Image (cartoon, rainbow, N blue to C red):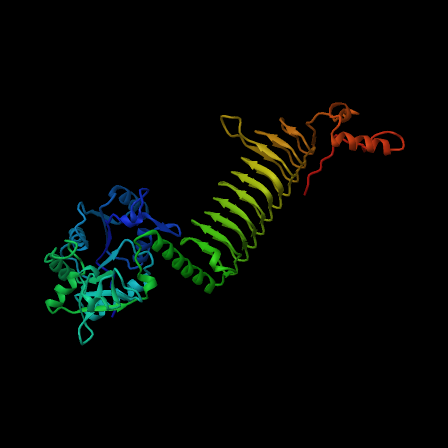
Length: 496
């Protein structure tokens, strides 16, 4: 039988989720791996290509609706003013589905972020092949406490679903549970939800009671069993963390089978939209977030966090934090580097230890090896930025940009007071404060001439260990002069 896309997907996302103990956001907006729980559910249903997607909202509806508009603008929100149960929610949602719709209506909870598109496609396919009025997605649990039990007759057919609070001892012994995921024939669903009762422990209209209504009408109800790690719901933060761990294992296994080396999966965390090409190596304690893309042959980590960052082929990024950066092919970064938004490192560039780069370009083969701040700058190709260089980009009101040309040597401890332009092939002397543009090929020297004040320590710090050491050195010198070598005011000392 050819798979037919569902007529509608109904997502139940109206509940308060009090067990999350959250004042910050509604339950379904909690999430992991770069998506809310609602986002994970919608990602799983998206591949089914349903004619319509309806999301029932209630608790903190404005926040949920705004989030829905951002991640799935085609989805239709339906408001459940009073949370009177899942059956009531579905009844409201059906008002947004054309009365003459044919095909399958898929109902899923908004707090089941581990659902897979494969499991949902299998459910819909089984439902259509069986010609059933309803088909349940079920799981078998070692500890089914809290879940509705799936009851079957002697012939193995589903007869009804009983909620945990309404179940008797024999029913509580059943380990097969309903996962709150259903496929329905539309007309049968509309009729059954209109006949739901509130005669139960919660005084609500239970959607699972639809199964008993349909079997009472001698309609065929089918079921398909899915692994528990694909159907688990999330009701509190303990379950949220467990779901995240399960999802992360699933993602990493998929990446590894596709050719990525993950040295320590237990300490590697990857968001859903991260792209890792074959032959990437991920070292321990790595966190890849957002829409990070890592090209083949690159090595990431250890102890590295990348968010919305692109990494080119063969690059090595070690003990680094990067946000919104572009790291080119064969670039080396770290250890202990910080790349802020707008950083672009071109092919073969190097950013080293304790270097921070913000809104700047570092050209092909250029180096910023250590202890420097590069903010709002453009550095050309094959230039070297000496240790402790600072691009002084902020005047207290506005940020200003500086430009460094190709094959430039910036001496150690240079302050470049923006906006400045340093021409191709130019040098700056170590310790300079550059407040004027430097022409191509020039040496810029911007520092006071050194002056040694002889005997200062013995006069001003008499009795200190330093004064004693100075006197001993002077006495040991056969000609009675200090042991100070010559200095030059034009040393570059770029510290590569």
